[in-house]
Image (tube, rainbow over all chains, first blue to last red; front, side, top):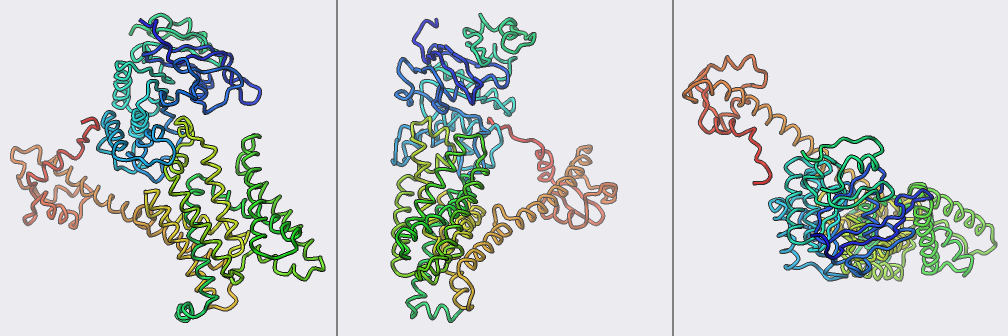
Length: 246
Length: 372
């Protein structure tokens, strides 16, 4: 089923701050249409991997290609949901305005967003259940609502591949379910979704593809085949007993 | 003061100075908003101090005190300082406050050294260069003001042109990069405009106080609005007002230096905004807090009554006020308020819940889930 095109292909990727490598010689292929979790302990380089794929961090070596072409030529196919703690939520703007930013990439330089962009943004907000909060000042949103706004902003990009950095961090159960339903819908629509994920318990339930990462790539493949104690132990260093079939 | 405004129509010099400080306040307020929102408030301080050696060197090289040439020197040296700050932060592991502090003091020290060197020179022309330390609005002439207006116009045009790019970069720089925008270009553009505004103000406000006129209007404006466009506009207006009002005070009181007065006026406006802003001000926050507290007490009383009313088949069955006694949240006033809301009726020493009050109490704790 997954012998299709590769959405993302990474070769020999190495990233280092100072002399210590954060990511070491990563080879990784993500097939089109999977919902993939990247798991690993703190400091394993999960966020760095995503940021490097997206060109935010420069690698020392290695290449990233999106559907067979360099990322710089394929930006419009890629959407990004950063960690919600990465921005100042006291910035003077509204939820709708933030979601609208998702359309800026296709607008390009100087051109202002118009009715068409507003419509896209409103539709995206509806998908994440935030339409009633569209005019809300972003500092007055709860953590879960902020996360939804970020998700809606990525949806407004209408991309083929979505990279998300810990979208479930600090959100309540309702929001978590709402978000995972949207991710599953994206997969159903043939999109590829890559998520930095922390909660190992929910991996088998939420995802169909998983990558174990701890500076080096430990393993990558279908959850059913490789999400086991052996790989967890290799990644986390201690004996991990996780109920895979719960 | 009255006299000043009368003079404004007749005195050409005063008019020039007033126009100059107004335009300066506007451009600094406008661009200061960006500095404040980028959390680069101290950058302005570092840049203005870094501009000092440029002024001194420009004088040493040309031997002339033409303000245009001196400001060009300030611009170059301010830009060098800015790029060194950026270089230090990105290439070493020093934090930006360290980089800012380093550049600020080293450049300022070098500038002071050059100034004392110049003062020892026999060149009679050198007198007055130290005016750039604290600024002197009285030295503004028509050509200076014309330059200010041109630069402000260009900045305004660039800002409107790249509004979308400025906004998204200020909010989320990494994300902006993933959308394919050249964030370095936008960043340099914003910083360049800020440096321009600072250099423009050196003659009027001076190296030492320049950052205040950049930050104060923006800090005040932020209190009044949650919209970026409105904030920039307010900030420009507050800056312009501080300029005009500061000039007015200093012109009507002899010997008061204009720069510091402008800064103080802006400072008072910041203080006023911190306290009296309807959105974020301390005063209204306190009022809201008290109001909520009273409201909550009222609700507690209502909730207590609900508990009693629930035990009777007829919810409007009257009860003695006395039974509320062991509960602390009620006073005559709060009972009256509850009656005014139509939640209870009071007859003599008895109270009874209305259906409306019953419904209110019942639904109080039912928070509606977000997904509906």
